[in-house]
Every structure is written in C-alpha cells, then in structure tokens.
Image 1: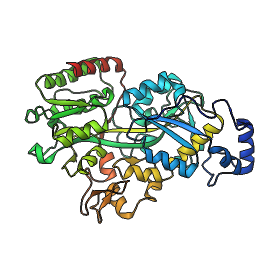
Image 2 (image 1 turned 180 degrees about the vertical axis):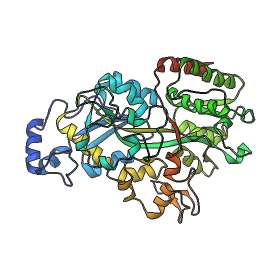
Image 3 (image 1 turned 120 degrees about the vertical axis):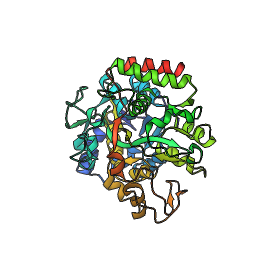
Image 4 (image 1 turned 60 degrees about the vertical axis):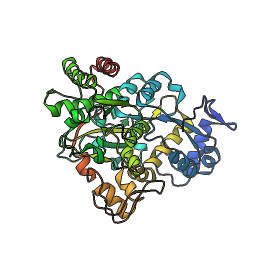
Length: 438
C-alpha cells in the first residue's frame, strides 16, 4: 500500500515496439469506439494485449487508497494500480512539488484548491465519464436537493470545475472540464465512548467540557481541525463568524485562543493525524471524546469496544475527495486512467466504500452491488434485518442495529461546513501550528 516507483513502463512513449499513437489508433479502429468513453465493456484485442504492461501510480490518504481496490483493478481491468498512502498535509505537498512521481492523485477538495492552480494536473473531460449525470448533485452545484443551502467552507463544487481544457482557473458553475471526478465523501462529527463519557453528548461544545479534561482529542490537520474548532467555538457562542469557511485574521485569532486556552488547561490528551491513531486513542480509553471519522468508529466497535459516532444539534463538518489525473499523463496510460475512473464509478468500489460508512459519488451503481438490507441500513437509516458485514466479511453490526446519524439525507442534509482552504490560509496554518506547539 505504501510502495512507490520512479518510472512508468510506458514513460518512454512506447510499449513493446508499438508507439502510443499507433497503438491508440489501431485500438480505436478495432473497438469502433473511443477508448475511455465509458462505452467499452470488453477490451479490444490490442488493448488487452498491452494493458497488462501499464502501471498507474496513485497516491492519497489511507482513507481511500485501499489494497482491495488495487487488487480488483488488476482483476477487472488488467493493469496495475500502485498505491501510496500519506497523511493529508504530505499529499498536498507531494502533489505540487513532485508532479512526475504520480499518475493519479486521490485527493480531497480542499487539497485541490491548493494543488490545481499549480498546473500539475490536467482537467478531465466529463464527456468521457459514463456516469457523470448520476453523480450526487452536491458535487455539481453544491446542493443535495434543490432546496438545500450551500454549506460554508471549500464546498466541492466551488473547486470541481475549471473554465476550459487547459485552464487552471476554477469555474463559478459546472463546465465540461472537471478538476477531480468525485469518489468518496462523508459528514463528520465527534466520536465518543458512551461507556465512559457518563452523560448524553449533544453539542460540539462538549469537546471542551472540563468534565473530559485530559480525555479529549482533535485532529491535527489544519484545514480540517480549524473547522472542528470553529464548530465548537460557534456552538459555545464565543465567536460569530461571517463565514467560518473563510475566516478573517481576527476570527482565526479568537478561535485559536479558545483552543490554546483549553490545551493549556489540560483538555486534550493528544492530537492525531491518521486513522489508526484515532482508533488506538479511543480503543485504549485514553480518549473518550474526539474528532473522528465514521469508519474509525466502526473499527473500534469491531474490537468489541463501545463507540458511537454522535450526531450533534449544530450539524456536521463534511469532506469529499476524488480522482485527478497528472498533467504529464498521455497516450495509453491516459486512456487507462479514464477507464479506471469509469470503473471506479460503476458500482463495486461504491458499495465497498458504503460498507465502510463512507458515501459513494454515484449512488445508483453502488446500490446494484449491495443487498437490500445493506442499502436500507447504510443509506436509509433502517434497522438491520441481518448482521451487517464489513467489506472483508466481518460482522460490524448485529441485526437490529441502526446506523449512527441515520439516513444519507439526514446526514448529508445537515452539513454545516466543509473542510476549507481560506484566503488567510497561510496565516491560519501558522496560528494552528502555534496552538499545537503551545
């Protein structure tokens, strides 16, 4: 999962003596369609003979860089997907500073806001995305339903499109050219140990309740952690934000001071950056309330330890990610990348992600790969009729259980903000790091 490589088998522009241009020309003629259009259901002969030589290098966070996906790509598409998992800050840095080291960037939308203007990725043609019209509208216009309000922060649709084929300027509305093809998202809240907190948890303010002194944690990724902090400060009534997704320096200062004072008072046991760190903190009981991701809560419960992903009255902080293509990719590798992205949205991966507690960008195809009971549990908030299994076949929830947060519409319909890159991003990151180091 963390393997890296320095060159692609096709980086010289040929494969087994056949030029990319000739290969693609012959392949298209044999297929009678354009490769990557999403219309191919069985690879043409030339494609099939050469695709096994392709290796696409993908990097991103451990949330979605999953070995099971790479294995299934090999099985279904015939080429190799080589994955590297990093933390969010390292992903942002590598995307910009080492653009030749990857072919596919699996990144979050707040990272996209930092990366795409650097010109290291290429816009993607939505006409080549077979299920584009089935993508959840929150990624296209910011609204889950026509009546939904657009949440604050770096909402995916604000950085999801650029003005043209060669543009690096984000478009104000949907165009033919996307920065990322959305794949995964969720609405996050606090995770708690119900056996240890000793009372109902209903608000983001509970993270700073002195009753949990030395037993609380917040995640240490500035563009995400600051939004959790803002949810806390706003719920406390201590800061009134014009737009907590794009704070002024004064608002940043007030937010960081509240968090720093809490830290100096001993409120926080730790600050985590990775999925595993959050699971270990909660499993051990060192932390009983913290910023948490849904599958991390499930991982704690899988150990037989009580853990709840707690809905809060102020709503959720949302995040989303997608697949982008490096600017240098061309020829057969580029067509393979489009084929991979179309495959990603065709249902198998969507169902895999849904079973982990995330949400897939194309719900219709994911539903086709889930049982009726799974869909009712994960997406409709219904009590499970049978035991709910993880993607690996382990029991995650017993029959009768109800998913934390209820249905998809209940959860994604109560998003208060998205992870954000602000106009004052550098200032915010510096102040956040001062808070962590205080």
